[in-house]
Image 1 (cartoon, protein in one colour):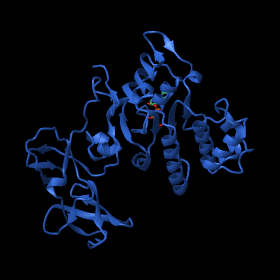
Image 2 (tube, protein in one colour; image 1 turned 120 degrees about the vertical axis):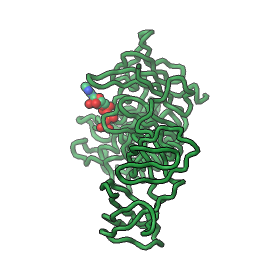
Image 3 (cartoon, protein in one colour; image 1 turned 90 degrees about the vertical axis):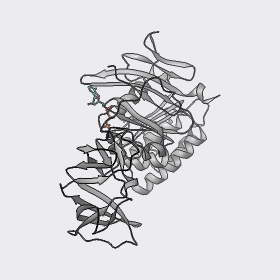
Image 4 (tube, protein in one colour; image 1 turned 60 degrees about the horizontal axis):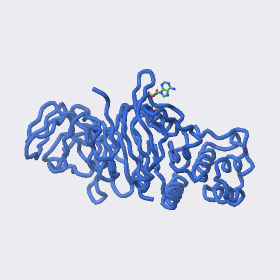
Length: 367
Ligand SMILES: Nc1ncnc2c1ncn2[C@@H]1O[C@H](COP(=O)(O)OP(=O)(O)OP(=O)(O)O)[C@@H](O)[C@H]1O
C-alpha cells in the first residue's frame, strides 16, 4: 500500500472557550512526525481530536481511504474503530488491571497473549512487574506500561504525548532507540508530542511547530532547526540569542544592546530580531559588542559562556576548549562574525492552506 493510501490527513477547526485550534495536517506513514510548541498551544487537544475523544466543529479526518470524521457528511467514527495507539500525559492506565492485563488490553486477535506480554515487558524493561497494579508503580514504570500498551496494540496510527518524559537519561535513550526500531518495523502515521528537543532531534524525521492553535512551520527536522521562520518558532526550537532590533538596514542592526553589522543583499524581510548562533562569536577585547561574563560551564566538548550585554540582555556563546576560558566578572568584547547573524521577523503568518502536504502540516486561522 502506498504512503498516500495510509497517511493520516485532517482539516480541523475546534474551539475551547478562549482557545481555537485551526489546522490542516498530513502525517505520512514513514518516519516519525514530532509536534512541538509552547505549553497550551493545543498539542494534546489535537491528539484527542484525531483519536475521536473530542469532536471538531468543522473539517474532516481521514486515514488512508477510511473517513474517520467528516462534519459535512455527518461521519464520526467512534474512538475504538479508529485503531489508534494512544499514550496520554497521564498514561490513562486501567487502575484495576495489573501491568500484564493493561498491556494485553489492546492486543490484536490471534496474537499469543503470554508471548506478547513477555515480549513487551522485556522490551520496556518491566520484567518482574507483570502482576503489579498501576498504583504500585513509579511514574516512569507507569509511563512504560502505557507505551507498551500503545505499541503492542499494533495500531493503525500512533499518537504519543510525552512518551519518554518520566524516565532517567539512560532509560530515555534506550526507549528512543526501541521506539525507532518499533516504528521502522511497522510503519504507521506517528505523531510524537514532546517538550524535549533531544527527542525531536534523535527520533523525528519531520517536525511541526504549533503556536496558539496554528501550525507556524513544519518540514524535515534538520531544516526546521536550522531555519526557523520567526523568533517565536526559534524560541520553541531552543534558540537562546534573540536580540530585539529597533532599527536596521541591509548593513546594520541596532538595539538597546548596541549595534552589529549585517550582510544582506537587500533588506527583504522584516527583521524584528537578530539571532546569533552560540558557536559563531569569539571573545576579542579589541572589537565587537561590550559584554560582561556572568557564568562559565564546562560542557565536556566546549565551554558555555553566559554573558550580559550593555543593556543586560543575556547572551550565550560556546567557546572551543582550545580557546582561553574566561572567568565570571570579566568585561570584554564579543566579535560576532557578520555571516552568522540571522535576521528574523518576530512572528510570521501560519502556513497557508494550499501548500502541498507531503512534508508540511498546514494551518490557518480565518481572517
Ligand atoms: N476541557 C477544556 N476546557 C477548556 N479549555 C481547555 C480544555 N482542555 C484544554 N483547554 C485549553 O486548550 C488549550 C490547549 O490545551 P492543550 O492541553 O491542548 O495544550 P498543550 O499544547 O498540549 O499544552 P502542554 O504542553 O502544557 O501539555 C489550553 O489553553 C487549555 O487551557
